[in-house]
Length: 141
Image (cartoon, rainbow, N blue to C red; front, side, top):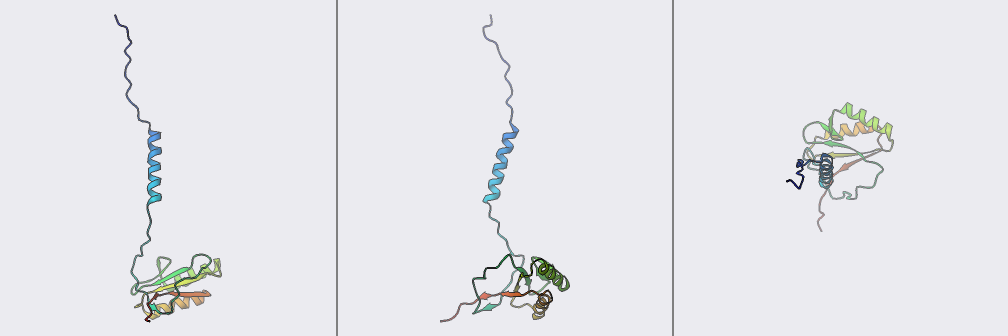
């Protein structure tokens, strides 16, 4: 005589929705907790100055940057450009914002002619504020 009913055992099921939710939370946590460090693609040895200002000044919006390396093409906002293209992009930026500022990062050993060409492009675009990034030297007592 059989007093109990034997039930068939069901195979356990994996709930995919919960698993995906947990994986998304872990992915978001990793993305938020990871620090992103912007590393330059080339090394510049900036020119040195005893009278350099370290505050950088507060300006409206992000200034445009032109980098003049020791060798190679001029870099405008992290993209290599020719001087006619640089002048065109500077004019477009001034058309969008007439009070745009230009910061020039030039290697200490960069050819002076490239700086003159960048300055000519800025003057042609009618940029009012052009500044140079330099490295402040320690003054002797």
